[in-house]
Length: 417
Image 1 (cartoon, rainbow, N blue to C red):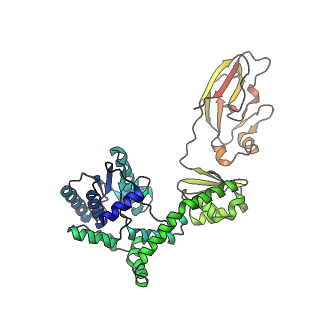
Image 2 (cartoon, rainbow, N blue to C red):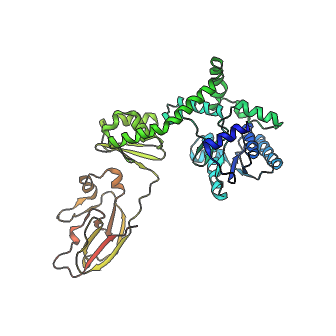
Image 3 (cartoon, one colour):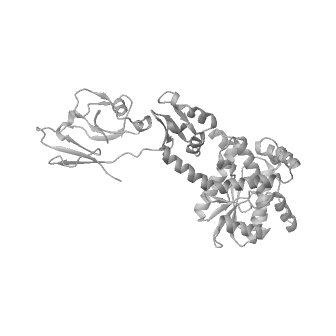
């Protein structure tokens, strides 16, 4: 079995024999086996244990077991305590999700602080089969059917080549004990239902059910690179970009699903977007991380965490107008009696566009320029006191223009970063 894992690591993961590997160690059978196998393979290890304080004395029992195991194996151990229920309540998420977020956030902190190569977790073939079924029940796309990867974003899974039975057999051959999480036998979570009820039923129909599910997952995963190439080529043909999805491409649910794949939208929202050409301009769909806008002839996506960088403006007195362009504007300096500041546009802002006499709402001007709602919200203006003198990147205000009577010319320009 050790050779089987060694071959799998060499083929699917690729580890430097001198690299530091962090081991996620709960004390259960899988993670205990992971620690022993990786040590037997000669890697430099550091174990990490999370005490979520969700199971009373049992949580402390797990911690004590892990401490003794690492002492016996001469493996350094770090333990982190979490008030998981409080965090879940604060964030408005499930306890299971809170525990997962806390665990992986800490793991990545440790990986960075210790300059570790990766974090090893103990998922195996049975877990892979459960994950595939779980994703299938949630209406996943092709990537969900591919299941977990052996190596992804600093997380490695060296035991994905083994079954649960092989792991238990290995521990028995070593005479190695482990702890059991009592919640694994509860049907509170969907994954437990699959493990306790659905998979045994499938195995009663076909004893090789787990292996065949994993084989299907492997086949899908190996097909993904070719699938991605096809998607990318079609995106280009259809004019789909990172931020925009033309209505003409809405004939394909797959293309829309791929465009939204990492943005947190659910199937019901995707269904509504499929009919976006019939909905009102300006309609917005929200996920936890992104928003999608129904613009005139396309869907436009924007990150909710995106912070528009405030442009830096250089001010200088010049003798004549020379350089021109959207990032440069000239003014009669003597007409500007207050300090010049830069801010985001606000609702109700207006100015007198260069070459015009009457005031115009900035929002109307930007609409005429065919800017969408997201672009409007990210528009900066230069103001002198309460008056807008420049819609940066577009047009200056006619009231402060340079004329034959101008004695001093003020040049404003955007400083390139």
